Length: 111
Image (cartoon, rainbow, N blue to C red; front, side):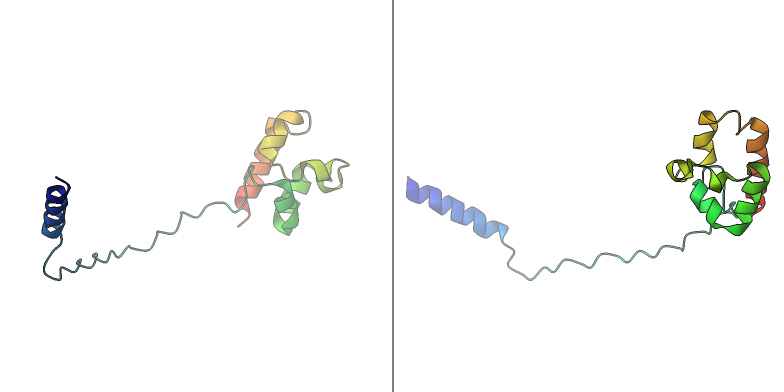
């Protein structure tokens, strides 16, 4: 019985092996159009980290006009990686709605 199972298995294997060279056709080449440039977005926003804003002279001028001396604040090293949107709930007395609006308008204008 072992011989007949081996014969059946060998026959099944030989049937599944192609007798001709059947090369797999090459996959079609897909050409994609270049991604469209994003609409002119503001370079900086209220979501940009404070240290990034302070590093740019134009953005720093906006900040100094709304929140003077922030880069000299004693806690600057602790919050410099945060954005104004993240800081606002922690400093509602300093980052009022009016101050945030002034920052947004000024930062939106920096290109």
